[in-house]
Image (tube, rainbow, N blue to C red):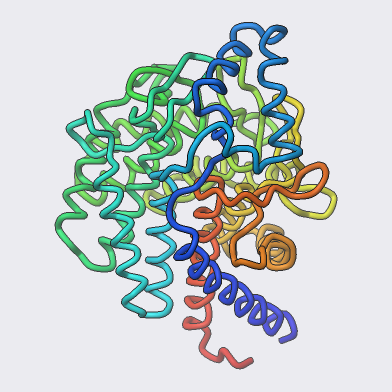
Length: 415
């Protein structure tokens, strides 16, 4: 009874924070700076490209931006501009959809539909099918990914947002877009065979492969599309990507970021991405391989990706020096994962409540937004929609919705 009362009190506090965040978002607006703002402009991109070509020469070029991120994150505005981010708009659409489901307030449905309309307008302009990428040129070790190039790590979130609102209103235009996205994900990305019945997919239609979470995203979307549209073609493709993900789970239960002998780090939110995708596929297909991988993955996740206080830490195997202690993105994805798997792992259920309490105590700012990072000294309080105000908003509304379902299912909620 005491535990139930504490959880109810926590639910009320989370709801208050969500309500305050909605007011903050209305006042702040739908554009923001970003984690990549330092490197989105020409100066930052050139410095980053030099670092990728030659670390010795490039380190002095990127060092001022790295130090600024750690010591004076407000300086982002000197390097780039505020922008709108499709992945954030998708998360806001889902968050308001969850709020509409839990409250029945039409204004929340209208806000969800508003973000979908924005996403229709901000799709990649040069593609027949609906798809989305970054609004900035992204410098990677493989070269520049131009703004507007579709990315396999962004479009699935938009698919999920359209699917969520379609479930609420049944509008045919959303379903048409879902079909278009499905065709894009099936046909416009490269498949690179890695073994019998296994293939990794490209990160964009032109480049990159071996990234575990990219194949996991695609497999989960195509699993849903195969059922939604009764089209086995989608799952024939997605199954090969799933097999790649399952085959490359490490003996300890983890997944490296990529199977390219270069990006062999293990971090928090990418691990959540993979586990979430497997959980969605398992729910849709009942796949036993997914179930076993989730069990092993959750064990690793809880043992290695939380700090001594039981809170999310960025890396269990870091690629470089980390200039922060905790990340809002990690918190948001941990809440999403634990809510998705609620009731299956008692340790994960307990961890979820600890994370939510910490969010309400330390991460909510007086204006209703969330802190972005806990730095080595102090906090990064610059609100960034993609990193990860939108993700936290969505995760909290998702958890509140799951709590309402629990209460509705309890035959005697007063006990």
